[in-house]
Length: 483
Image (cartoon, rainbow, N blue to C red; front, side, top):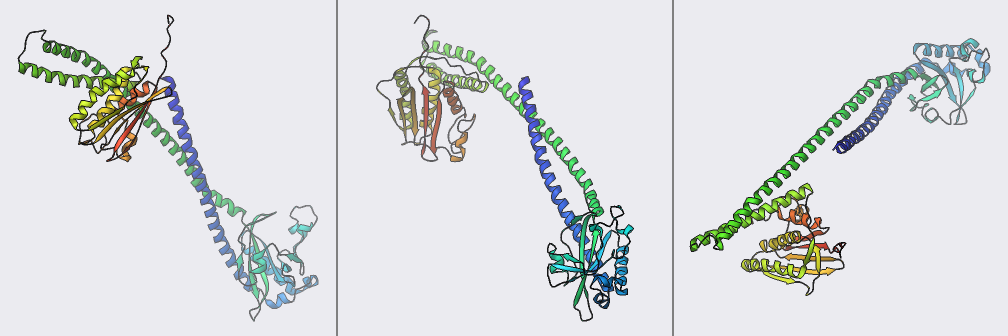
């Protein structure tokens, strides 16, 4: 019992772990999807805002000033200094805007050249990012005419000269995560002569984005834990319910066994006393008394059979079906069974045929259990076959097995219900109101066959009949020491 409880608890924990794993996986997937969706949505809003900023700022620049700046020497011109000043004003007016610059096209579509940068006139101290006192190559601010490879920036190369636009993807550099936006600068005739570009640092923005998802993530984790706890509780309740039902079922079977066993003794005693009356041991009786006693004996026989069946049901349920093997003359056994079933078939007007080998061996079987199965099958074959129908018994030997089949042309079993054929108390829907029965016969028959190491199966078609096949192993009788 201790092992079963521990095994059940382990199964509950494993099921709960599986549920937690599945729920956790779903939660992680949902969180990832929501995070990606939220990030994309916020980035899109940032792109729109940045595009609006650069679009407005591009209107501040004079086409005449830009046309005066084309080479390094033009950095001394007033127009250049004015442009750099305007770029600095744009940068200072917008928090986190790191770069502001103007570029124009060249004859090479993959190469642009700088007109000016917000840092073009900055001091060494302002542009010395690593503070080493030296202006490194990557710290050198762009100057007029400096080339810039745009082959890896299709938005800048192909779209920025036509309309304001922001990059679709975030980029990373020494300052952190960046997002760039561009807008065309047009002359009085509407022709684009250059583009204004700005790069904004979005590292803080991304941190805020992640921070907004933390409460949701914590809630999801809390929800997973609650679901896991609830799942474990439900599993425990369900297991306790199953255990309680199993215990109730076991106690019921115990009660049936006790009651059936206790009934068996008085039934046998009454039956024995009736036989004494009928045999005349207690004096001569009138014809009417004899008739009534015969009726009583018949009903008592049915009661004794029912008590015996209830005992067998309880034994099967409790795993206590006893097999008492002994030498069984199969030829004599089948002859006895035919003597019982043939009158019933004749009375029902059902044509009954038997195909039994002339020679059958003496088998080491439990006669009571073999009879229990065979009588159930034969009785059902006649019982559920309408007048004028046919039933048959075919017996054959095959290796170390005896096989017999019981066939009928009766009502058959509905296909949807065939899987329940050997269940306790089951009766097919097409006979439940047409014929009397208790639904125990086939359950007991199957238990009797399997207790002897055999098997039982059937094929059936509703409205056309059924055929049951039984296989029993012919084991050898163990030798005693004196033999």
